Length: 63
Image 1: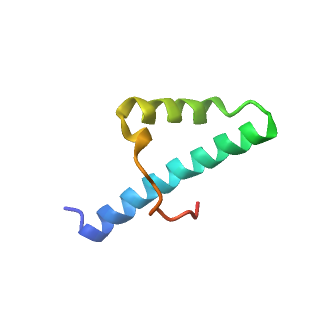
Image 2: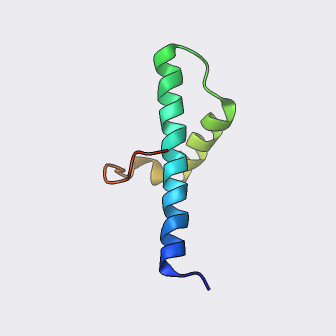
Image 3: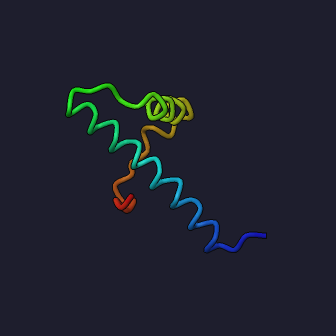
């Protein structure tokens, strides 16, 4: 069974990966270039789960 710390670390890793996708999508938009299709698919899947609107203001911003 996973410890609380292991669960926290795994969840934090997931959040940081999603933040990295978000930053890459914003960078592509700002540069006027086509975003990576894999990043677009991740964004679509997150939006479909209903998690896309969750406020991530308290999440760390290192990725």
